[in-house]
Image 1 (cartoon, rainbow, N blue to C red):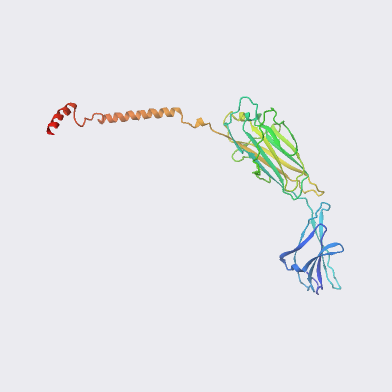
Image 2: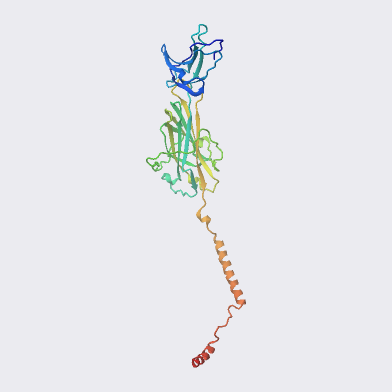
Length: 374
């Protein structure tokens, strides 16, 4: 805006561009500065944008608009970059306005998303009949594997992270899980040994070739740990939980890390009596530790992922049949109704009807007469 009493001759807006940024043009359909009035120039090895404001720029005239920049050479050397704005004119007095600066702060920003799945997501008991001797992993109970996946959605990279996993190994002294193996590209330590009984293990399931794995239960925050889909999660004390601590490496933007946990459900522990629906729930927490920049983020993100497997109790097939006493009672009632029907027919004379052509003697006497008439 020209706040003076006269016009500003050959008025121009000079914008000093920092080395980290590039000029990409005027924001169209915004303001009253035309796209032809600005040009890119270099003055004394300094990149600048020069916009024509009028010749003259009359007193009281206000011009406004938007300039677009990109910042492709951003580094963590400086916590901010600065744009300087100044108006130049050919007037003899007050030919330059005050320099106005706009400081753009440089931050490290991160966002992590998580995906989880249980395969299968539900098992039925007591349909599973465990073997007497436990020598193979399938003798324990149905097999389940959990998938935990964390994706760095950027825009910054991660140089170091930690993944902690907790699962109920025992609940009130009762074994519920038997961990057979886990797969993750990291250096991990566990609170309990894997496959402690040295059982014969089956090869892990492999996804069909040429098909991508899609994991469900996406979440970006902490889930509610209460009732899960009508089931109640089994909770363990610290000494009864399986703890897995993994130190993760670098994770670039849009890269992901996955943890696969394989285990068996101790079906013998659930064979005592029928119970209400329950769920075996494992908690995975990813902590970001470091970023490869001097400028640290304002907050190191942490994301919690819960994956659960529902346990349902199926009725035995024999319990759905007709009881024997009902079958016997139905037969007796049927015989009673049959006897009552026979008695009623007897009283009505159903069994005392005469033959339509008389007795045998009458038939014999009628035959000669019939022959003579013929």
